Length: 212
Image (cartoon, rainbow, N blue to C red; front, side, top):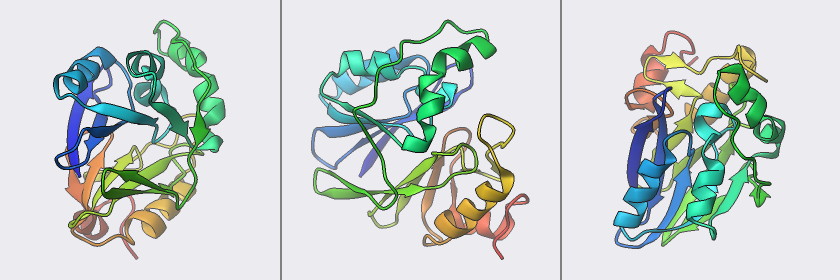
């Protein structure tokens, strides 16, 4: 599985385009701000997004969903149902940070823990990992070594904040230990902000949630 990462917008949030090796199928993960940059690159590569997946529905990861959907109408908008209230309240989130309200389209469906998606010949596993938000999910590829797109659950030397809507540190720590630290140590961790890391590195040295 190949990844095209984009760090965009005022929060430098990472939008990721996932593609299968050698194919044209694609998923767009977390279209936040400056979506046109992502759209142009997807079109330049001749890719055909079939899904717009949200790791969670905070503003910096979901602000541009409607714009991405307008560019690729066949792509299904999918998120975990526990984050639906956050998603439906994107205009209020935007107002809280001084941004114009984005249009909010109804999702085309919902993600479930343990669900798998096929991208070309490769599989992508959805795992529910709440704590940063109630419906946060991480996306784990079955490539070797594995790649985990983790949104705002785990960062290099840090973890997602829990003082926003629906956050809970104890829940977040449990998700990190039970979902992420259970992955192979060489799993490449692609967070929603900042540099990449690995599961082994964070399990051994993360100061907020060390492995036990």
